Amino acid sequence: MDNHPRRIATAEKALATLTELIGRHPVDTVERDAAIQRFEYTFEAVWKAGRSYLLEVEGIDAASPKKVLRKLRAVGLLDDEQTALGLEMVDDRNLTSHTYHEGLAEGIYDKLVGYAELMDFCLKAMTRHTPCDPTNSKS
Image (cartoon, rainbow, N blue to C red):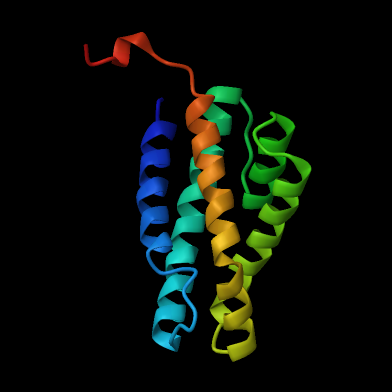
């Protein structure tokens, strides 16, 4: 197995591209829309890393983003507040195909800093709670 460390690394790279574009005001529509696009693929990478972590480390199968967040809460990686924010993030991710509505696009963009912080926290928590495999060390 050991798929989750690779997925975490991929998600970290995606998150780095997102953080390049968020938190700036004013932002033009091209930058805003690019940030939302980066949010979409970062979100996908992070929830799939979470799914892989849960399966490989915790032995828990969770097949959807919301189930992954709830299970990360159940194993102690997220608290109630973080889980609630994560569930809101899933809902906003599902709305991103409608960002041709200016108000919706602005609203999602304004939340991206908090979402990026949550995704970063999740990735770091999964990394901290991954058991070390001495057979994989490079010494």
